[in-house]
Length: 198
Image (cartoon, rainbow, N blue to C red; front, side, top):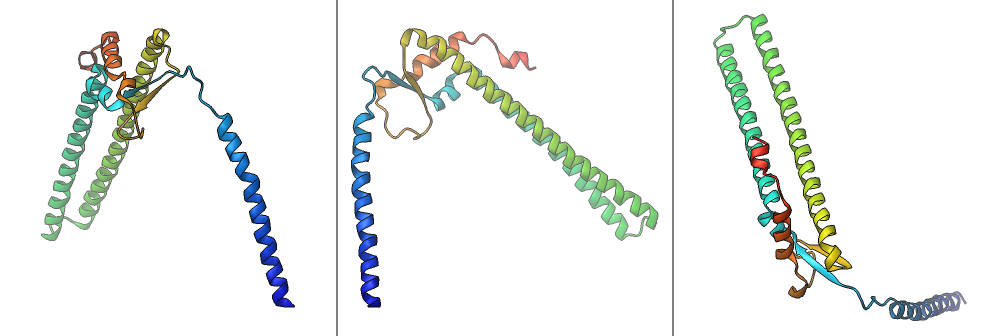
């Protein structure tokens, strides 16, 4: 009896599963039949990597950020080396008993303050650099978006994709407007960051 009850329960679950599968299948088909792309869809794509290497604004800002990063690193390295040298000097003299206990404590406290100052400087410079990068990314995005808005008044694209690496699985080269967009961006770009930031 118990065995029959289990068999009936299994049969009931299977029947429910079968009917729910049968019900959902036609709904999927009907949804795919109604979701048709409009026949007038006009699309294009732009290679972002090419913009980064060929758009004058992007190249200038990238160079600027690289120089700023190198300067930050040089500053932090110099201060870290000076602190390391001072700590090594203190350690050597402390082993030679060159300091009284009060002097050693005062020097040690000074070294700890320098360490804290260096960490604070590293944090501050890192935040400033991040803010500069964010500003650049926004300016680059705004520059491209502004240009494409003007560019698309004549072209009438429905969608312009950004292609970076292999984020689009397949792209027909006929839809690639990268060179045209880069030429237009460079023509529209009036500034020169190198002179402006010196």
